[in-house]
Each structure stands twice: as structure tokens, then as C-alpha cells.
Length: 275
Image (cartoon, rainbow, N blue to C red; front, side, top):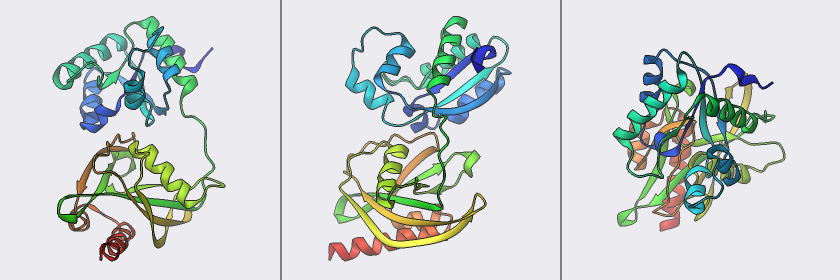
């Protein structure tokens, strides 16, 4: 017997749902239906799992589906409540009617029936990212940037979900055991934005210490130049992102001194490189 025998529905939040900042609207609609989100998690999809989820014998657009659903982990919500399947279906219809622009980018997925709900809850639960990683005391910060007009640069700043503070910052993450800072930087870049093509990874040679999660930690700052047309698919750790100049980031968005100093060091490196 699996854990989700009593769960009535499940929602998979797709990248465009996050990109368009619709998470709060979805959660509000769920609350208005007197439903309860009893568990939140993430799932990393591959094409085989997509086929199992949708029960498709073949994939008609595998390249597009892989780009859309398999580049970054997807947020999953398990829902409990009266008439949950019907209620979530209604919410899905309302959101798609209002925001959906094409058949592929469908914003969210939910089961169509109670039978599908049981099957999909079990499938998703078995494939969720449940593995607990052993955290180290080392962190990376990755400041993504791209060239803009007139030889200037724009920097990517992301807003964390409310449960994680709701503030703006560059990409950050823990360095895994037996992983170099550089490898961790590239992995976090891929996981949090979906970007795999990097023009250059720059070591700013700046690191700082801070206390969090009951541990003294060291954070090393990198810059990552990406192609001007790079597509951003933010993970469920963030609700939105913006490209901006360093001046705007420093004066209006970045909260912590370590993040600000890291950006200043990167800008100084870039200015030296351009001379």
C-alpha cells in the first residue's frame, strides 16, 4: 500500500506557470475551493516518465517535450479535500483559458478522474526527488549575465519563493560531497535556470562566510556568461526573474552585503576584461 491511498488529486506545475508568476493565483484558487495542499515536492522528468504519466504509446514531439518538461525539476503539489479531482480540473480550465497560448505550453497538469488521480499520485510519489543529500559547509553563488547593446551587461536576479524568504538574489546552492566549486556552480545554474550552454564561467576570487542552518558556511562567487538569447526556465525555488543592470541590482534588488560585493567584484573583472 502506498502513502497516497487517501490523496484525491495532484498538480504538476510546469515551467511556464512559474515564468508567468501564476503560483500565488493557483494557490489562492485551491484555498477558495476549501482544498488543502498536504505535501509539496519536486520531480525530475524524463521522456519515459512523461509517457507513463500521460499514458501515451508514442511521443509526437519528443524534442519540444524534453525542452519543456525535462530541463528543470517540476514542482508537485498533492491535494486533499472534498471533490478534489473535479475542483482542480475546474481550476486548471480557468487558468488555461485565461493564460494559455498554445497546446504545448499548458501551464499545469492534473488527473482527469479519481482513477487517474490514484495512479498518478502513486507514480509521482515513487519518482519524486526524495533523496536526502548530505550538506557540506560550502556554498556557491552564480551571477548569470549576458551582453546587451553598446557593450553593456545585464545580470539575472531571481526572487525566492515566500517560504524561503521572498527576496531577490543570484543563483545559490550547496556544494555536494566530492564536488568542486566549479562543478557545483554549473550544476546549480542548470537546475535553477535550465541553462546548459555557458560562454564562460568566471571565478571572481571572492568568497565570504555566513551562518545559516545552524552551520558556519563559506560561499564562493562565480559569474556565468550565457548567450544573449538564452532561455530561462526557473525552478520551483523561485517565483520570477529579471534581467537588469548592475546599478539597478545593487540599489533596488539585492538584500545581502555578500551578494552585493560579489556582483561588484564580477563587474570589476568584466571591466578589466573589456579594456
